[in-house]
Image (tube, rainbow, N blue to C red; front, side, top):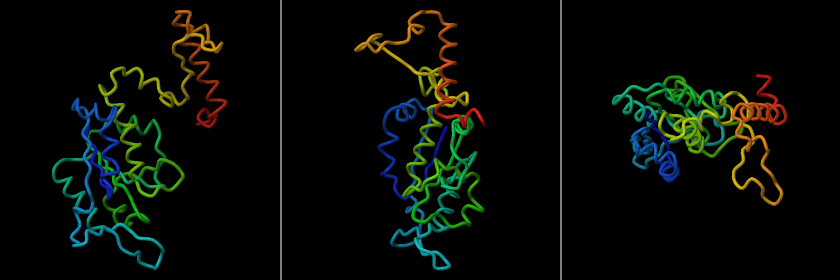
Length: 225
């Protein structure tokens, strides 16, 4: 899959996408991540992409023209499944959305900045708005990184053990069961005997029971949904 991220701070994201699983996904040719500096698409000689809001409100607003020019240039090269704006008032990102997006081919993610973007961009160019939580960030870069990471790791072949991704928290709308590794006894802190039994059926049942118990205790809202 291909993700094009439009930002005024591409340097903020370069290191993130060049490490770990995301770097390996790109080297394998399973994912492409392209960063586009919005300032390259403005006609302003000072490379400004923002201006004061009409009506006298506080803050600065990202302008229509550079965003439109960038998105238009990208769309001239290929079709996109969605043009996403990361915004506090978008739909809340979750595992279900990540699963859905991982099946798509090409995505554009627009990172907001300052006070936000001109509403006309949202009305005419954006196809989906996504929030990573009920709080405000300085810009949309961190949100774009979160979304990209959650989505790309689900692309077949990115994680060598695909079963690992399918057993993550929230894949079945519940939390994951507790996990342990060697040694089996550390300072008297022992791994549950069932996990050492070799009885796969009983282990799977234990994991399910533990997952349900943890969800009821920590995230009962997931069961209500």
